[in-house]
Image (tube, rainbow, N blue to C red; front, side, top):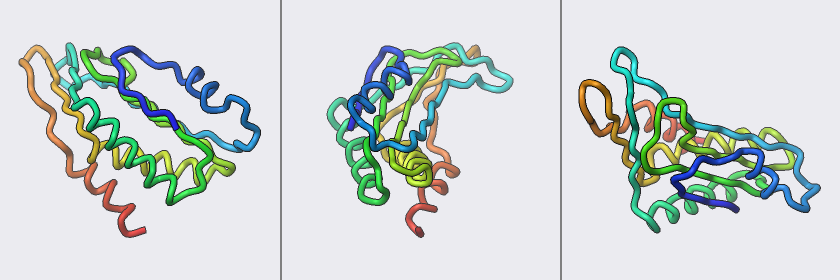
Length: 150
């Protein structure tokens, strides 16, 4: 399992090479990459992501462990960036390796849904209108809650 919090950009192919090194039991990789998107009507100049070192890694480890208990996962990687980012920059990468695609897809979505609601990250957006902290969204909570009934 690879869990990284970093300021520098990530390379999905490099992460996959690292996760796959010496393996022949992987039949599927499901990945998600989240990007900084521009604000509608108020161009985003910068997004800054903050976190609590140690606590954040522990939260990501917990989310990943829950996914491993729930699905047949061969391995997984989570890379999340912090610091100042610009529109179109990569923010987060989740890659799940499994023998079968269904487990890989489901675990990847589960990890992202829980990461959005349980991982201690804070986002501040800076635009021409000024700076503001991004509040949590009800839609993210609803996405996470659907897993609790399954």
